[in-house]
Length: 329
Image 1: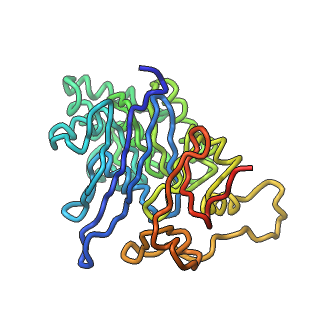
Image 2: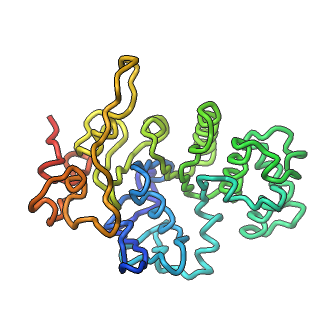
């Protein structure tokens, strides 16, 4: 297979939550693909469906409320939505690694990190406990934790936030997965540690040749680390493009709004950054048509008819709502 072949294809995914008000769609007809060895960024405001999309891929939705109603998730040629629970347990951690947003919730606070890391090897390989312990020390060394022979006996609370995140990365990469899903991996960290973690992830991806899905609300992180980007709004993909193309020629009004809210080097010191007016509607109130038009207070057929999602030029897809889509020059 060539590097241009996708390792993951998500097609027409619909994920909903069963509530007192009925089934509410958090992910609505989402499609994208991840190429081998590449990084795909998924960006959007909080609540737009980024994390639910990721949890749908690995089938870790909260139960019994979360339900995948439609679609396919094809990973290395097989549909994960048709896999058994036993098969998915082998996929998670073995073939697909996950880096969660908050390491203190991803790590067991009453277990030493060495025991937690060793379990990854014991579950997905045929290593003995001694071999798993030694492999765990090597993983801590790989993610640049100093004195790993001593640190492996620490509890999570004895480590700094950056060190805990490195442990979570080590757990995600322990079995050399083909794909890593990183859900806001640097959100809770200060700027210096964020840069260190992103640099570490890029180097490990280069060394191990894995594909990455990076979920974030930070367009600066997207620009620095990703090859392609998916922009989500209110449960839908509104734009998808190679990262350089998206930053140079954003075609959807929501994408342009996100980009304009980023500070620039030539921005006057006391100027106010532009904001996107309005709020995202709740899941129960979302319209079938253009949801960004709903936010902007527009009325008429645009709220009733869903815009087409079209490829405008090579690899650049966008929702072609007449109010939100801007033809490229």
